[in-house]
Image (tube, rainbow, N blue to C red; front, top):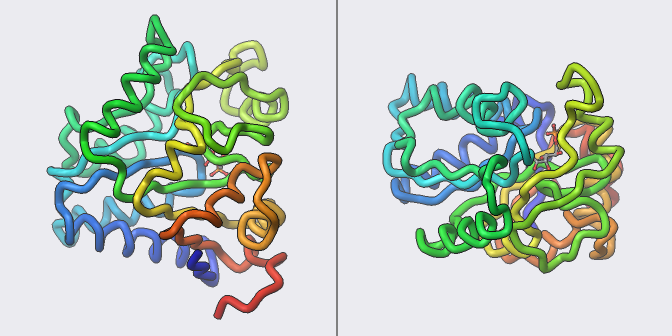
Length: 246
Ligand code: F6R
């Protein structure tokens, strides 16, 4: 695992963008796995800048997102579809027919999850998966206790996650109870992982992920077994690490 510690959020985002851009230049038809949440927003902003100012070309990439709420239509402002178009896809030249985000409105969710897994295989697998991390060590919606071999499936959101996300909805009742998420096993099959974290609220999860034992209590710890995992964090998120990563 390669650990890169940057001075602040901005530097973390720029380093991540540099790595994503290098892949897009080297392999224009690469497959990128995207995450939502506040952590990758700086990375997405930088990718948009690179597209607009440096002509970084996304026209041949294929994208897969990690997760989506069940029951929210793509046009719902809190859906991850909406998030991705608003914060990235509308501002770069991605081909909409190469964008895959779990369908929270699918009639048959199990069938959809199988289709999603097959689609990833059909395009040759994910070259680079971008990941954030929850303060409790979750990746995507794989909460503590998730099977480390899990595949794309429907998950019940924990009360804590629903409460954390309630700020984005007008009432607690409106917060979805379920989500579709790539599994830990699905994520581990990506050829490269790029895990980002910033701020002291992530320091404990980062300590467990980078230096702790591998355990289902912190699903992110499994990335220690990945051959090509890069963790890019700021100094605050790195504040509980003991080894020297300079
Ligand atoms: C998002 C996702 C989540 C977030 C995590 C961190 O697609 O799968 O696991 O990466 O909850 O969220 P932020 O970045 O908002 O702290």
